[in-house]
Image 1 (tube, one colour):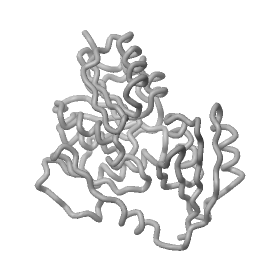
Image 2: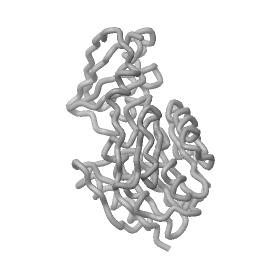
Image 3: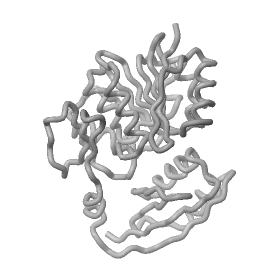
Image 4: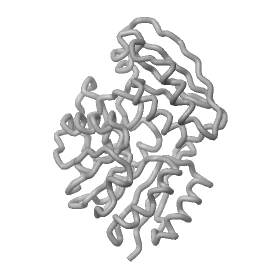
Length: 280
């Protein structure tokens, strides 16, 4: 299958804006994304490329920041095989082995997660995902009701299930992610994950003991009130998708205004993840 690479460049695009743009591009048929300095590259089968639709997305979604793009036709090759050859397994905290179906099985690890990559997110390679996996490994999930908000491939929900969670609701606004969760939970033999399409409207009025939210700063700020309403007293909130420093300070101030107590943080290459507990 022939593919086209579209390189998007911006000096003013924030991380949350990039995430939203990528979600819209996925709806147009782009199926793989690669981070670059000041932007990213999106890959799409030639047959799915519609420049007019792309221009419409940029006109309606790229508001408040500058962005330019360039198009490059790629040589004809097996891109699934190419991606697989460059996708390496990872190990988190010497406990969790994340691999694809085409990698060697290593049952010696306490936890093994199988994620067949279709897009370059949610495979554990990004710093935010790795830190969230580490938080799950360090904490107790046995018998708890869990929310995985912005679930991507469902990798966090799968590890929570393997750590003994009772039920997990996995929510994402991207239909591709919901389909990916359905496939990956079968690959991992877990049945207690419910994938659901939507945003904070999909969780209003529900109750959780643990909330996992690896999204971005602005969406976290928008959803904090719902997290507060849905989380049980002394419940745990784990968040990532933002940077250490000002981002964490802003998020902590919002969380504390809603009765959350900051517990600890993890930092990896300036990316940050944090744990909060809801006060009685």
